[in-house]
Image 1: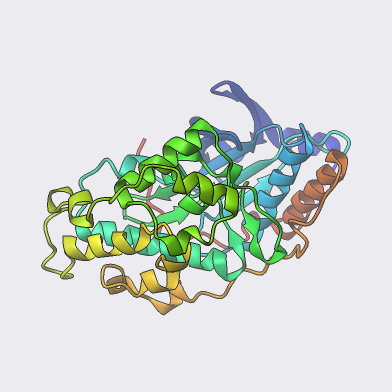
Image 2: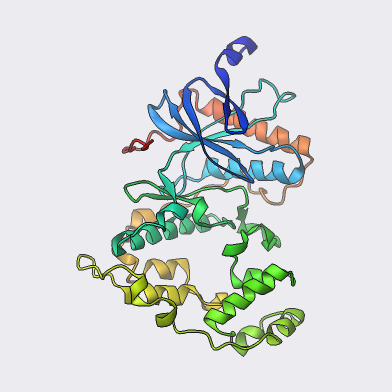
Length: 360
């Protein structure tokens, strides 16, 4: 494509505090969120005739860490295709050459809300259990390819008004098959598991978090303590001992909706599932597969969703790779060009069958 023709396909628009340079097919841009990984806006795609989300990666080439995260997110999003994982609809850059390359835009399905907003609503057992079921399906699909998300939290889980749920944001994901040590620091603080907290040294926040865990769940058993390295075990053993609370006290019936007559879902089942998930010892915690079989979840079990073929990761050395910023830049540029080559008609996976209009 010649330079003049390419430039005519794009236009510049200010979105919040950022300037987006996007294809003219995308109109009515409005800011909907921002974070460490990028700025996101909603837009209307005139080619697909639907609303979409456009994410401008935040300074992807400012250093090696940002560049590697940008590459990882793009590669993983290109290879993952599951109904409970956010779908990648387009990738583009307005720059016309590798020398000028500096911006990466990811176009994704637009959802109605994230889980931060949804959990403020009064949900019945059907919706609660269905949302949990979809989360587990998405996580299982990622795990089937050895992908560990590492930053699952309500703001990275999005929902449509029909209760469809999808997991997003793969900038911090890793492929478990590498066997590399994975630093726990990337995990958002309030969502760190006990084993992550105990692997982090003794900063004030981490001590406070560990204290809150054991105050609620009780001091872990000696069997668990023996699994810890000596310095961590000494620290844990020197903390005050707590008996913890029963799950009936932690999660009384009043916190749950009324029992469901239709699917026979009830507070006691939800509480039982929580008691199996909120276990300090990871080796005794319920697995994803086991949770999918739990009575509170398996009313929704569909083999086509639970046992979908694993995504094929095209870059088997995804996490072993170490490059200069310029080398990462070239790799990402090749991925963008590859997408453009494979999607000249504007669609890769096709448009989902039922797309509800986003409420403005």
